[in-house]
Image (cartoon, rainbow, N blue to C red; front, side):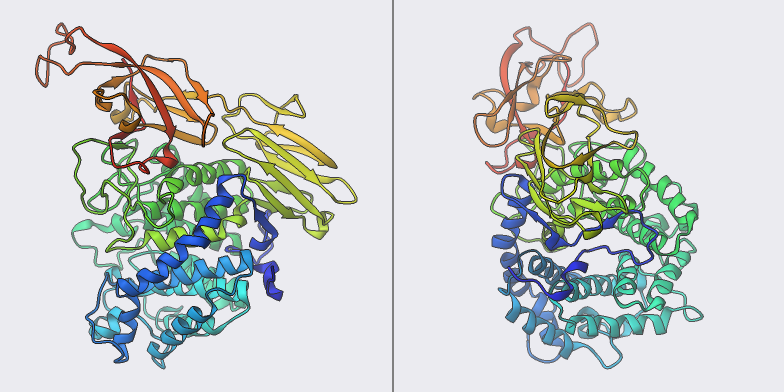
Length: 628
């Protein structure tokens, strides 16, 4: 395995100011192994997903959209206005895979597509095929819908990743030219303008970090300052859809299009990390509580409304109508990681990332690595038809194909979210089978983490340094009894167990299955319970029930015993349920007439990880089980 000389900086978020107490590790410094799912997913991403994306960039017309601008294709424009971003996200996925494995497999493809972008780019720096090929009159004229800066944001992130991972700056040169154009047009003292879809903010901060050009940070800060002042023509969806209803520092609620809100928050946190402005971090704490304490699904998904792909009201979390867009959970991983780097309650943010990775995002990709969910409901009724971007089965591509390449870039960079260093210790945030290069200021050497987690709660830690390593290991809040070499241990107040590691130790986390209830204000979930094991949410699929038993008729007793079955694959949970016969009294009945015909019966029920549902057909599924 070979890596470029700059590999030590190959990480997706690299604060420059030195204010962040946590320092991210480079992607090649954390080598995920095959015992656990994170490493397996990352390898599947390299083996199957990236090539699948490259193929679909051709078949969907994304690359032809570039060619037609310069007369090399006679095909009509295909895709949404922001289709260019699918190419840039795929390039970013390739870049992080280069960083991870040192592969040269896609070098010629990179040469071809970056050269194509260069030929489409205008001397001004502008490159956006929907505008150039269809509507030149709309250039920077309809910022609420044209996504020009959103596309630029993904271009920048791909370019920075490629330079950090492979030491090639050809795309970076193109991205900087476009960013410089935007700065000349919308920078300080010039025209006021913000993008209808936040994303450029975090990209500009990373461009500043990579180039040391402070004007990119100033531009990102300016765009945050301008939001909430009515600059966008919002139309029928309203200003809150675009997060343009209230200034960022005053916003009290996560609202509107979920992906937009979460990308914006990632950018705001990035600006805080560089400027130290406390008001921005204070606003992000308020936003975090809103999004995660009142609007997050149990699986780590966001967005309860289909019409505008949006957050709903507080506690509006219907399982069957959940939109729960994959890109929203990805955006939240980015935001949570930046909040973690800021140093305030890192365990809270790490546990959120873990929930998202092992549930919403794991379920969003099929076992083949080439089929995807755009929306991730927590219940699939047997008679529900496909609608919008929520078909019954995973799809190989979508007309709005934002999620597949977004997943690919996340899985390729996933190594970066496992651990950080501080001045005094190495902090292990995610329990993953891995080899981790310890920074020299902490003693150097390698920390080996051997685990099948979350299939198994045993986490074996081994360090080969000359002196003991000060290690902080996160103890999940759900682990009611944790042991170190068999002795009970308790984490410090911040949720981390600290030890001086020399040689080998074994941490054991409690994976006893547990029932979970929702807050009483979640109307859709009153009288229902869910099963969790470690970080995983479980569900029941129709395919696991006996013939003649409909999932919609299965109910459970409060606190019914749960038993782990580990005979094959990921552990399953066995329980007994009650099959309630359909009521003969009609759709509604008076309380004195129970909705049962008296022939309820008991049935064995098997629950599987939500991450693996939908791989055996599109039968009914549900996470929340009604209590009898």
